[in-house]
Length: 321
Image 1 (tube, helix red, strand yellow):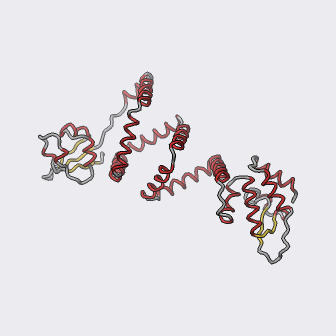
Image 2 (cartoon, helix red, strand yellow):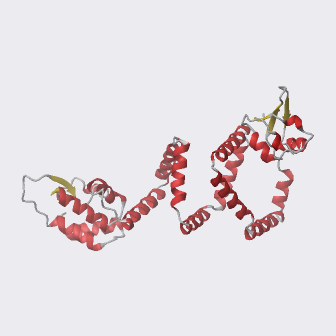
């Protein structure tokens, strides 16, 4: 029924929280007292109780009113300012796309996100679709988006972001992620794939980015509190019989299988990187530098004068069977 008290009570019943009661009053009063005497003026139909939220009243005559376009924009603005939700914001995106109130839009976004996450089936479907969409993005587009985030975030915002991530990283989530990682890296092809990806990213980085990354890692590794904390955690783990038994029965890392191609066409296979470094006194850093690059080993990188047989050789990764 087209009654002020009834309409207002329905808004309060469904939405619980009203952001601005004055704008809700204004919205209802405009519509209940509305009259348009210009019969030739363009008008649109408007649902007083919006059909997206109140589908039960979508066909009720008392709930539908003819209103001119300018007034239609005004009432949509009033209802959004009264109740900040996505359903009331969307019409403004094309009716008044110049209207940008950060606080109201932020409220609408937060509530939309909470409503989505509260519906497990709907959220799972959204997450899967989002994942599929992200996988179709090119590496350049992914990099562009990431750079926008990192270039615009302040130190304070970054710390807030880190604290939020810590809170979501529960014990259950850590165990699930650990299980996923073990399954992923149990496949030798995935190990090789990740190795190539890391090398590709490193090779694409400019000198400034490499220096910044190195300095950041140096600060992290030199953080005394972080190192002491890690040490205490390891000590506590070694006090538990379960962890001791786990370490006794753990499988050794098979490492990366390498192929050294000599200048005369001969091939030497190494089951582990460490075997290569011991035989030729050649650092793991240099192995990674040359591995799968098709670049020949240069004399400047051969530290052991007796190992000139490494000169102009090529290093490749083998997939372990």
